[in-house]
Image 1 (cartoon, each protein chain N blue to C red):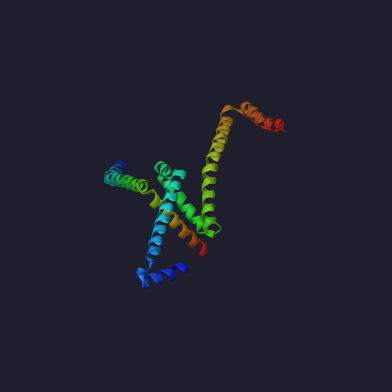
Image 2 (cartoon, each protein chain N blue to C red):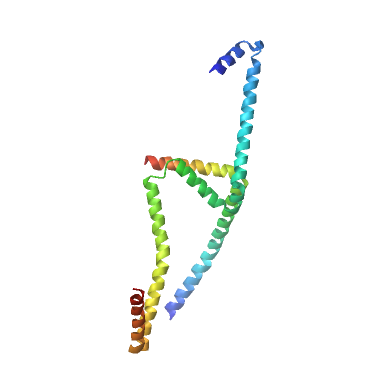
Length: 137
Length: 65
């Protein structure tokens, strides 16, 4: 506020020595800009942003998108819950389906062996499977 | 037997027609990927700031909806 008044007086009467104020403002603005640039370059160096970008450009951009989303206050929203639910569903499917597949193939093998080997082999297998839980207990 | 041969020839024709288009699409996608990656690597600060700004806007919109 005070600076504005000084600026006005310097405009009204430029030869009264207030011109130095304008140059002082200019200098301080330049200094502030230089400091900001220095801080940004320091931050870049500290976070090794360029290395990260070179290593994984899409991932870094996605991370920046996520940071912006969080800063924008999008965490506790219905969109986030939908995205999380979709991700969980896909993840569970990807994790559980192979397990189920393995179990079913093991079961199918067991059933096939049971039919092919005859009653003695199947009895032995059943006994072996039943013995495990009882042994664990 | 004739039907099987007809189906086989039709499939071959379709494959021969579609394959160049698929190759072209693959080449274009590879080129686009290279361009995008190159741009991001050339201007990391701009891209990251832009991504943060876009994410911020999306977050704001999601909050309002």
